Image (cartoon, rainbow over all chains, first blue to last red; front, side):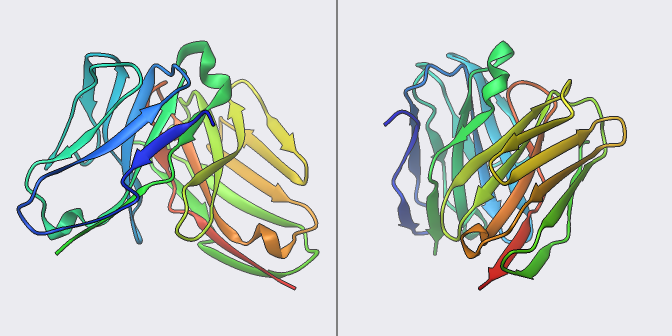
Length: 115
Length: 111
């Protein structure tokens, strides 16, 4: 099925470990972004990309890296995991420009626990 | 900085009631506004998207309105059902690439 695919769905990390959250979309969307969702805080933007090779920081970028080498993929890297990064992470994509009539499509999320 | 507020934070109604969820935003220079539904432990499902030039959108029992000048949107749910129980999120887009979210309204519809 077309859409945004996130892997893994669940992950437990120890403090200081690194990992990559994967995000892939098959809709040829230009724009992709990562959000984290925390109780009482809502969804907050971590990083986003407006096309292959172009990324920028969002509201809460510290501790995370991204790259966009292809249109389809937008991985999120945790460099040295901290308990404060325990959260649910969502990847989203949109067509951009006149394609905004279709809005944003979200993945099913990755639930990350850092112990 | 854009801020999005949703009122009420939680709502409990009996089945069959018509209800209104409210969303307000501080900067009216938006491209569009999108309403999402989120079930517990699940991802976000898009319900309705309203372009900045539009006043409302309808899908089945759902109707969303947008008053851009006053920074307000409402989501109207007609004849509510227990299956409508979920958290409803409002989000605005100021550019094409990102969204700013409210914290959501948690809706419980009892049989």
